[in-house]
Image 1 (cartoon, rainbow, N blue to C red):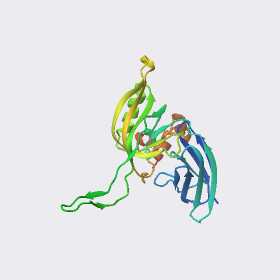
Image 2: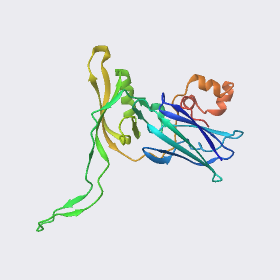
Image 3: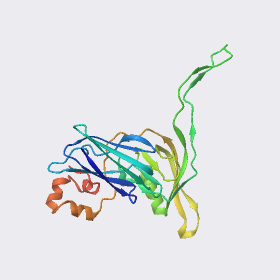
Image 4: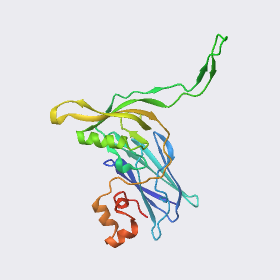
Length: 252
């Protein structure tokens, strides 16, 4: 039966999991206030590495509050762990490429509207319209994401304009977390105080479904962790195809 150990990492907005198992995993599920879903991992992330007895991975999408992980191996045996996760501050995440994510100082000016997707027809000679009913759309609106310095706001703008599905997570308002795509964005100021001016990005958004792509990179990858992962440069070359893959912790 898999045994899960969870390490809380609020500094990168994630939870690191160590799963002791004798078999590869069939699934790794997370349940939190945002619902129940499969944890996003690399393409082969649930495979037990050769010669190892543990699977190591980081979940970058848990919500603030109670989180339950359930690991099921290929023989059908399951193990579970429950944690209380304090997110600490709002985050703007790129779910598939979390290395491009940014911690926020605050979120303001949140607005959301839901538009109709029904079709209303008014044929000649008929006093009442003909309506082709559909469910309403997802949330659309505008939100202020405040980063602090101008450089941090520019980094935030770079993240927003990458053309990726984004994720907002925050610790204060139940149900406000969402996946979205940016429609447009502007760098603006929240408070003007010379060098202490608070900068951020105002984003028009459209809420979308959670992306299904596998995890493509890592957050919190340091020179110390690189050094600890291999005894020599030659060994690193056997694990990574390029320096960019090394930077993103994308192993062969």
